[in-house]
Amino acid sequence: MRIGVVAPARTVSRESSARLSAFMALTYPEHEIVFHPQCYLEWGHFAGTDEQRAAAFLEYANDPAFDAIWFARGGYGSNRILDMVMPKLGSAARHKTYIGFSDMGFMLGALYAARVGRVAHGSMSSGLGQHDEGVSEGWVLGWLIDGDKRGLEPALADGRPAAAFNLSILNALIGTKYLPDLTDHVLYIEEVDEPLYRIDRMMFQMAHATQLKGIAGVRLGAVSAVKDNGEAAGNYSFGETIDQMILRWCHDMGVPYLGRAEIGHVRLNRVVPFGLL
Amino acid sequence: MRIGVVAPARTVSRESSARLSAFMALTYPEHEIVFHPQCYLEWGHFAGTDEQRAAAFLEYANDPAFDAIWFARGGYGSNRILDMVMPKLGSAARHKTYIGFSDMGFMLGALYAARVGRVAHGSMSSGLGQHDEGVSEGWVLGWLIDGDKRGLEPALADGRPAAAFNLSILNALIGTKYLPDLTDHVLYIEEVDEPLYRIDRMMFQMAHATQLKGIAGVRLGAVSAVKDNGEAAGNYSFGETIDQMILRWCHDMGVPYLGRAEIGHVRLNRVVPFGLL
Image 1 (cartoon, rainbow over the protein chains, first blue to last red):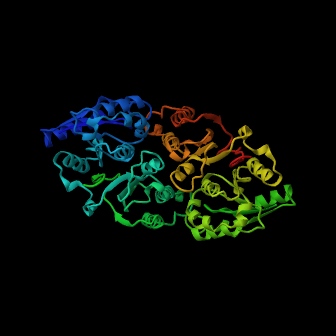
Image 2 (image 1 turned 60 degrees about the vertical axis):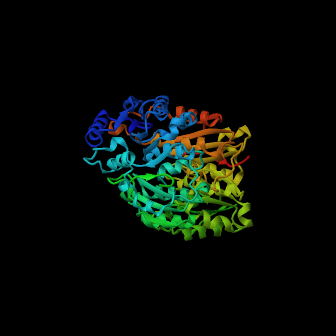
Image 3 (image 1 turned 90 degrees about the horizontal axis):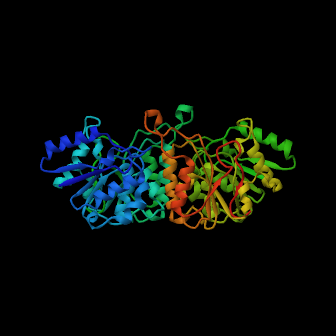
């Protein structure tokens, strides 16, 4: 298998790529990982200009020599290249797997909406070794290379089609053509670095989104690094827990809340392939 | 004129109401302002439970003795009462003006979508005197009581229908039934307390929202108290200014960018009645 790495949002360090190459050489010596030089560009907030990031993604996605595109990093920016890349994906792009999460939800959502390739929510290539870990990145490689299902989110065993998003990214897709049709899908969501009032507001939008009326249910991944909701300034705490919030909004939405899930901006971020397994 | 004040989001101090009552007694002695006791309730993040806030709004909105509802304060929470209040608004609610902004955009949007009453974006009652000011609150009262147009946003003179929103609230309405049809409207937006990457992400959603395809143009109000975009942690600055961002997204959206506007979380927040003047 030949895996290509591009960075449609923020820039990546050469050190993180070296770590991953070393890991591949040890663990999967017969497989190849190739980092597009675009990963190391820097332009303001981004790993190169919109044009550079779009060109790198298109180059690898349309290259039949790659079997999979593993996104390098999130952090904001992949939404800015959607209009540029989506109309230009050719047949080679349709026979590939795309994997990443967080801001890459824009890519996953748009690709799945266009039914281009196999799309999966999973950890990113630059995450390996960042915290002397690498379990989640190992799950991605095991699934990509060997079809190993041990890294998949356990609830996928229910046999229903699935999709997974960072809640902020899901929200930003709502009302646009890049949100895929998720009818009958179990929707997995996760969030990081937000105060409770914003998480509640995002759940409101999910619950009221016309496009999401047909989903089969919701599973909630990690909601990590929750920010202060004003308590530090002397305000009362929000008044509801994350679990109370998701139960209430799922009730309003009229869909079952199916429980927690092992995904998110945490050490163990399991793989969720979109659609049916 | 009899003006009723309710607080569908966060709680209000009795001191702010006393300030406003004193101002009214001096400036508009023949008119009356009535603060619903719900304004002072506290339940977690909110001015009372969802049920209490919904009941207070419905009581005043459906009371023919009130000519206008002036929202007391934003801060998050009015979205949580929409499903409860919107189906219960009676004929008295249709002959009223509703004014506020920020989180109250949920109320304004839902009311305008249902064509209930006269809806306007303007400062809130608890803002008077908060910073030894009160110009914007004076504009609201002058417009409500005397039909004084001096406090209106000057660009409204273009004669086109208008609507104004905090960008975060507009985003949260997109894809839901509470976003009104804004075809042929000039859309005024403002934002506060956000880093540039989030403002850019919100403009992406605005630009790609199917429901907003028919708007006549965009005007940008104050974008105030912009948060650090990562520079403090040593990252590059975002790479684009607010004006570059809005120009780019309006171009992508295919609608004219019409320039800046005098609205927002700033000292001078002019009144923007929704629809035609």
